[in-house]
Amino acid sequence: MCTACACGTESAQAEVTAEVTAEASAAGGTAGKVGKVYSVSGMTCGHCVSSVSGEIGKVGGVTGVVVDLPTGAVTVSGAGFTDEEIHAAVEQAGYQLAGRS
Image 1 (cartoon, one colour):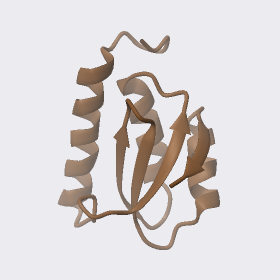
Image 2 (cartoon, rainbow, N blue to C red; image 1 turned 180 degrees about the horizontal axis):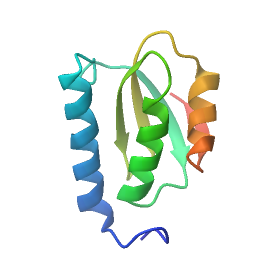
Image 3 (cartoon, one colour; image 1 turned 90 degrees about the horizontal axis):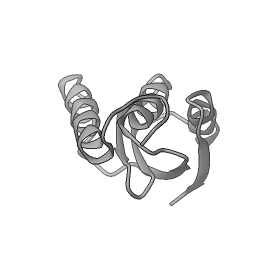
């Protein structure tokens, strides 16, 4: 459980992921398509997922963000963004980018 909040890991993760995907789809995004997959370390709950998704979602060209909390995989859809921009967004959220698949 995250020290920043009192949410339950699995249920909160599912709610936040669904919310981010729905928002991207409603905006005409490509959240359902395969994008770049990054590995982020340090996420433990829904608050973590929300923080990472929110910061990455601010990057220009990003149309969708889906976070798989148990594996730390973050799939970013869109065009025109760089790995460096995603790295900076993850760090802004307070987490570490462990790599890219």
